[in-house]
Amino acid sequence: MDTAQPRLTGDLPVSVGFANYQPSLTDAGALRDFCQALEDLGYAGVQCQDHLVYPWDESAYGSSAGGRAAHYPGQQVLEAFTFLATAAGCSQHLTLETSLIVLPQRHPLLVAKQAAAIDRLSGGRLLLGVGPGWLRDEMRALGWDPATRGERMDEALEIICRALDEPRVGYDGRHFRFEEVSLEPRPTRPADQLLWIGGGEANGLGPAMRRLGRHAAGWLVNPRLPLEQVPPALESARAEARAAGRGEVEFGLDVIIVFDGDASGLAEALAERREVGATRLTVLLGGVRPAAHLDELIGRAATFAEAVRA
Image (cartoon, rainbow, N blue to C red; front, side, top):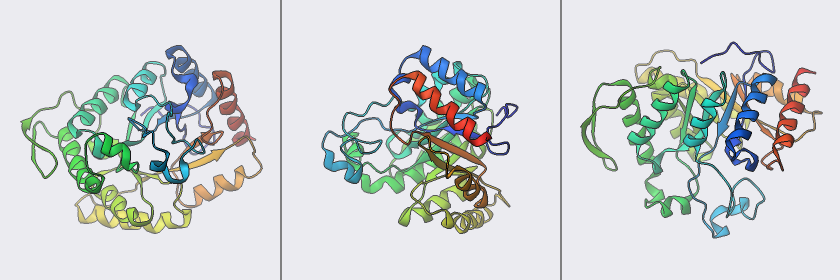
């Protein structure tokens, strides 16, 4: 990845999260202008979330229904890989990030193919974040049982790693089966440098660290996880990496910061994230509230840039 661009914070790359949820970026020209503005301001990347469909029944969402958060019936969201492929052609330096692809509901060979293509065509700028997902009614609508998501996630990770690293791959699992195939061209880097693991909260923290240790380069931290739990969790991931024969791995760590325009607590929030070992930041500009138009969105990005440089 190109890291020659100046960084907002001086030491940590900063990406803009939930970009594919912004209604003003559904136009290719607007996306080009936004990507150029981010690069001019010193941002490092643009990041997407992944939902393919949104259930119409609000009871599917729990506390985040009814438009109170990013997820609700009728939500506007562009498909993540399509968005990033377009953003690749609208930028020169931005990292193209998924945070995260709901891996169990996509065929892993298709994910591998899409990831390899975007990474190749962007000159090695893809960060492929994956996770097991949470929206069960979406999973059912797409034809699979949410109770199997952990098993499907593990099988899919194994398949993706082999498909991206080996000249041929076949698989005979419980959820995915196919004879030997080749997937070319492969990406510019090995799978364990391309993949990041997302999530990890409550009972999901252990599985997330196991997957991180065995397969990935970094962790996209769940914003609901208390920051004090991050260092010990990473220690367990390092132990998994040693057990898997990867040796001593220093994992990347992406931590979210929410910026609603008030800079009063920003210095403290940045210090807390550095203290737990963050290697990159994702900023939610205005929280998860969409901007009314492109100028407002770029204005939010500029305001945050000014705040962290102050």
